[in-house]
Amino acid sequence: MSLLSAARAALRVYAAGAAVIVAQLLRRCLGGFVEPVFPPQPERVAIVTGGTDGIGYATAKRLARLGMTVIIAGNNKVRAQEAVKKIKEETLNDKVEFLYCNLASMGSIQQFAQAFKKKKLPLHVLVNNAGVMMVPQRTMTVDGFEEHIGLNYLGHFLLTNLLLDALKDSGRPGCTARVVTVSSATHYVGELDLDDLHSSSSYSPHAAYAQSKLALVLFSYHLQALLDAQGCPVTANVVDPGVVNTDLYRHVFWGTRLVKKIFGWWFFKTPDEGAWTSVYAAVTPELEGVGGRYLYNEKETKSLEVTYDLKLQRQLWARSCSMTGVLDVTQEVFSR
Ligand SMILES: NC(=O)c1ccc[n+]([C@@H]2O[C@H](COP(=O)([O-])OP(=O)(O)OC[C@H]3O[C@@H](n4cnc5c(N)ncnc54)[C@H](O)[C@@H]3O)[C@@H](O)[C@H]2O)c1
Image 1 (cartoon, rainbow, N blue to C red):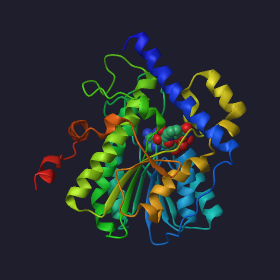
Image 2: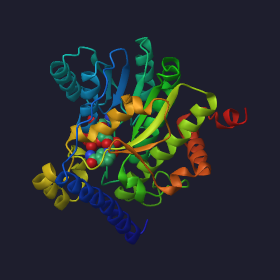
Image 3: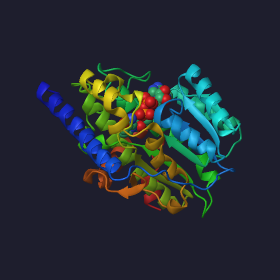
């Protein structure tokens, strides 16, 4: 990627963020964000990736408050112990635990899935939330994938596929299991380079992040199409949390970090507000049996036009299967 294209990618990502911030500011001025109310979910089990911090922590806490059994999947044991203790204390729900899962390692994801299955628990909700943003230097995962596409996208692709049988076994018509995947408004400015998903020819942290978030939208839509074709009681939706005051911004330009520090309380959503759409997708009766939607501020909205391109969805799915060793059943399922 030339210097010019990298600058263009950065400008596009910042413009996407700025547009969301203006919309959030307007909403704050016009009455703010109204906390949604959800029904209790005492019998249901959820996994939340990246549930130790930020939006994931707020999501895990809200699900625990609704009475769910919550498993936090993450790669930071110390943060996880604190998070589990705090959630238990604040929600008075003891059914919260941590299971180690480094999404930047396919081996670790496989071990996580095995450890979860050993527990013989059902699985009703999988929240694919963890992520990294704008890592300055091109960094590789354990398996040699560029970190944004490897962790944010391929990690969740593999995890979801490994847990799909548990979700299918736990869902029932009228009470479907749900896959909730956290994307971002940056997907609107993302470009998918199927010939160079790992940015090996040149690297832009902004383009790499936006690409990973675009891939997650395409993934969710194709997953829903496969689930529909198989008649499975599982839905897959994708959520956009808005611009949220978390540590995700640790790598952004220092000027942006300064603005966030001073005005974050006003411009940004709180992590709790940022979690509402994930929780909505995970539990609201309004979405019973409804999948393949892009959700923002607890409402359906349109994602980038190219995300509805069925051929691109299939191509990305096939490429992801070959990179992660997942069996691609697309052809078989659609030719039945
Ligand atoms: N904060 C925002 O404004 C914003 C906007 C749009 C989308 N998002 C998305 O929301 C999600 C949560 O982000 P956040 O803002 O809460 O950021 P955060 O940095 O507070 O949390 C990210 C979480 O991901 C986990 N994680 C990172 N690397 C991991 C790995 N290798 N294995 C397992 N877990 C790992 C971290 O431990 C942490 O719990 C991300 O997918 C992000 O892209 C955030």
